[in-house]
Length: 301
Image (cartoon, rainbow, N blue to C red; front, side, top):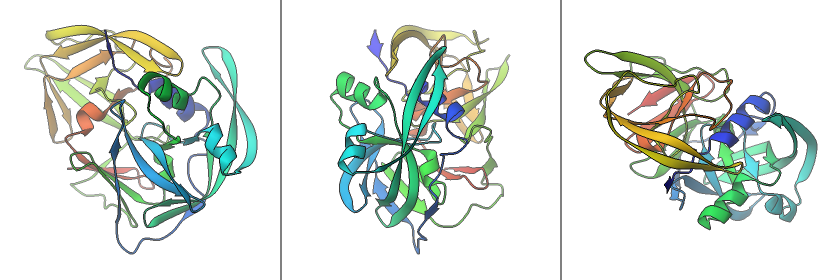
């Protein structure tokens, strides 16, 4: 079976437990013009950017638009002598865990600066440790989409570029409103063939390198299978088997069409108390996507 790492467990734990209070920096600098950061490919097929913290670095942080909050390694939090704000508790699979919240006074992303940003140190086993163990990939943390709340965030995957802008999107024919009940961008995708149509919700998630991972409630689809294979999906909670299926259908996200998409059936991959799936880098790699988190708007090019 082929390893296909998905940042699903991390995503759902963070967005349901922590996002209420720790999902954005206190403030950010204004930008006279857009600033660009290079998206660095990781061995896990995710992407990272380099940032400075308190004028030190650079440090490598993976980008995860499927998480509202951000994570830093305990090692780097100690090295930078960051202030521990508080201990937070959460439950996963009926087990109780503790995480520590640390404050970053200043993070610099090229010309952009964010201030007083509270980030989590996740207990072991952590996703940072999983990346090292499984892929020999060293990252210093994970930046959730909330890190960019005060800016327009553009991810241009074909050009491997992340751009931050001051300003806002206009609600017009080129933009669409996304669901924001979890403080992450959740959109509607329609799967259809000549006889069937099924509409489902998906979080736009750079933490997954698949095309579509189905919502937990979806056990079967009415479309013809082209091929199927068992895969391993990995996270710091371990690796689980899942079924990946290529289907004869078109997946439509607004005016973007994906022919014969692949879907991963979510059987115990992440918490079952959500009604959305995950649309990952397998889709996003073709697109340029801009998020306005304040107005809950997305523009897809």
